[in-house]
Image 1 (cartoon, rainbow, N blue to C red):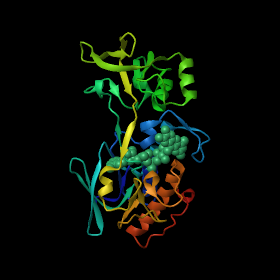
Image 2: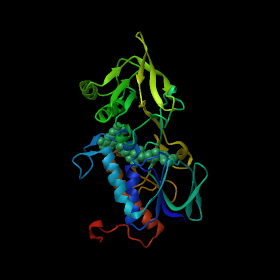
Image 3: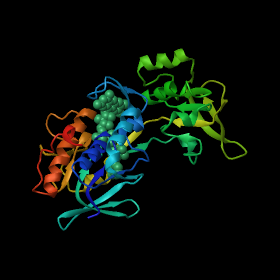
Image 4: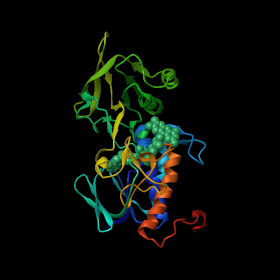
Length: 323
Ligand SMILES: Cc1cc2nc3c(=O)[nH]c(=O)nc-3n(C[C@H](O)[C@H](O)[C@H](O)COP(=O)(O)OP(=O)(O)OC[C@H]3O[C@@H](n4cnc5c(N)ncnc54)[C@H](O)[C@@H]3O)c2cc1C
């Protein structure tokens, strides 16, 4: 086998499972179709404060993810990021997981921590061909936008979150939304207005304007019933939301209900050596929270340790006793 355990999904649950697998002495890889670890937290709310993770009265999403990566690091997980898990086959007591591009990972067990599935950002048609050349769907680091003129497109919570987070570092932030009404919570809209961020409503980004050196210079905006205008832009954050889809996992012979995988109290699925934890795992009374995913990751990995080695103890011992 290449690994004792392959974890599918580098969200909070998968990252904590990586720590736990290392603690249990298992070799492991973590696969995620996103280019960065952190799952929903990184994709949708890295700058938001989270108040319901045990031990942290308040923690910024980005910092929680970094803490999880640091916690797993001593066990050296192999991160296969930007890679999608496509096919799962059982072979001689183990499993073979095929990734997009055709690479095959052989594992003793697989833990699916795929959350609400693979994210696909809703496209901004005018930005076709500009992804990575001035347009982003989410902002991995605020520092990348320091001193830039940024146009944020969208009218939901994440568009307004980006305005709040970028305002202190960017040269200017302008929000463009195609309606007059916003979907975002009123309190955050108020905060953004109070900061003086310009909100251009009933408006659509119609064209990206290229600078002579090929970089982004501006965007042309059409305004319903008003004068069209050009906004200076070094970067466009297309925050139009994501669609999420379990995709290939639905065809792996698991029991799937309402886009979640049925598990028992050991987090085992209907397939031998295949476990699930976090948002993607379903059982009666399930509550989808980061804290729940952490507990389920520990339960899953300890049971996997026994499935791989029947002489191993289910109880891992206390980490506080480990030198
Ligand atoms: C705006 C917002 C605010 C929230 N606030 C809170 C909060 O305050 N407190 C709280 O506890 N929870 C909160 N949540 C919920 C919390 O983010 C989730 O419960 C948590 O992220 C679940 O973690 P996970 O690791 O199980 O799944 P996810 O975070 O969804 O991660 C799953 C990962 O699996 C990857 N993946 C899926 N399919 C594949 C595949 N086939 N191949 C490769 N990779 C794949 C995805 O790319 C993703 O990165 C919030 C959610 C949102 C959207």
